[in-house]
Length: 381
Picture 1 (cartoon, helix red, strand yellow):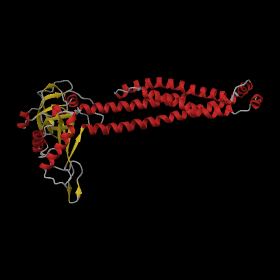
Picture 2 (picture 1 turned 180 degrees about the vertical axis):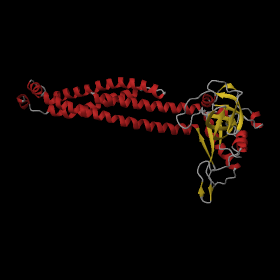
Picture 3 (picture 1 turned 120 degrees about the vertical axis):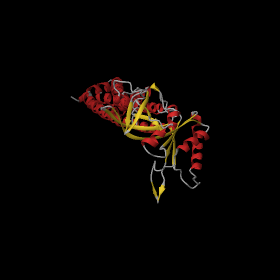
Picture 4 (picture 1 turned 30 degrees about the vertical axis):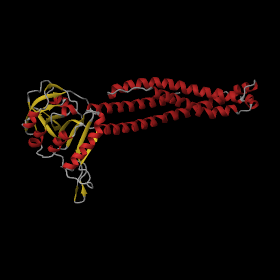
């Protein structure tokens, strides 16, 4: 039974792990904002050489304004440019992402300010040296004090802290959402990065049903503004949160199937063990088989007897395996800090598979027993 116990526990636990990972990815994507549309700088061809993603510098602040004014399906539009820099406060320092944004970014990404305020229009117009800190930056630079009102240095530029963001937790992919410093995009472009173009444009559709319409309108306006002909490729890329969610869901689903397939090998090993044990059992019970046949048992009765025994071994191993899987998923939930739930379908699948393993691998010993000659069996010592 040990092979079946390990196999069933492994299959159920691996499926629960995959499902938990998929749920965590989905929640992380949802925390980044619903109905979100991201317009990124695309590739350009220079001298026959394509630069790849983000090679274009065509996205500008005016593009953002045009999208906000010209696309009715968008509820918010924010400029987005970022780089990595060292943030310093007294003797503490921390390397983090510096993100230049507009006030609309708060509603697009569902950011909640727990202390102070968010970036406002006055900060953007005046190119003010102010910033809002993510939770990770606060923990590293201000472990025992309130950062609001304090001054930090971003590179060599002093910045006043005006707000603190609520923690969103670790992302399932990419850098942590909390490891960030938000500044007005005008400050980022002119004072910190010294650039004239934006890397991304972050948008939010008024509703999920309007996302596809908004994507088409965004493409039309940007192609018109960038003076692209029908034969020209886009020098930008438009992606929705739904596309990202689907891509990550497919990846985690493949991961789940892979884990389940690997774990099912343990069930096959357990089945081989059952076959060996049943062959030994048949050899030890040859006289019993002969007596039963002499008393009128048919070959089908002997076949059924050994098949039932093999299947019962598998089912009992499956039951114990489910219990082990429950313990392992609870431990895994605490260890990986994510919800790992055992679905009824995975339990049913494991039970059916274990019963099938018992029947399949118990068939050969059962057939061998049912085809014995009763006279030879009675003479066996």
